[in-house]
Image (cartoon, rainbow, N blue to C red; front, side):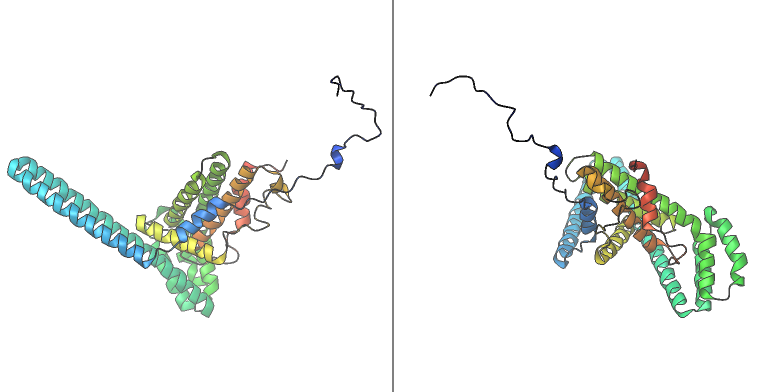
Length: 329
């Protein structure tokens, strides 16, 4: 077979390929907010009884070893260099004193969270039973709880002046929301919006594995702690973790961390999300889920239940938080 140039006839009868007739590209799966869902499952996971026993015994053994080693170290130092030994003894005593103060503060923080939870349950009962006397008792506890905070002084004065004008439980508690809790609700909403923007930005821009999960969990912990402080909880380390776990357990149990079809509709609208890059879409969904976590934290940390007029809208918070990250145009 002879080798030579090959003539390609371009004027054949077959029509040229039309790009418009090409089959459509398969749809990419919608972002599901895996970072926030993983963080929620991690925070809500309850340790087993065996693991609790293990860590409790391990902490006891390590504490005993450290205590005995410190005691032997101080005694030997007192024998060799008495002055230096007494200095080290004073340092250890100061360390124990600081640890004791931290423990007392943690217990006080847990106590404040319990007071908030007790007021919320008492308010729920007063509303369900239309008990004006119990509603007045809850309002009095609320005024005492915020006594000494300058940012609530005006609201406390207004509530004290007008609470005698109310003759039903719902009206009295709504007045407490209007005069005392409305500014705190606005401050808590701003914290939720800031956390949602941070989670969305990091997820969209940082491609490192597990970085988005760590950021989502850290931002949620900080957001819940700040919301508790705004409402007067001032949770410590243990109290913050306990509060965070309660929030995520509620979200996981109710399925609120699942991605709904209209989760980003107020920001994106229609099917715009399907046209975004996968990473940017995940960022927006994670930010929206962070907003859901923040709304749940507001409900848990607030000393009174939300009335229909004051209940925060997750869609509105998502729109305000993420509108600057994406433009429909």
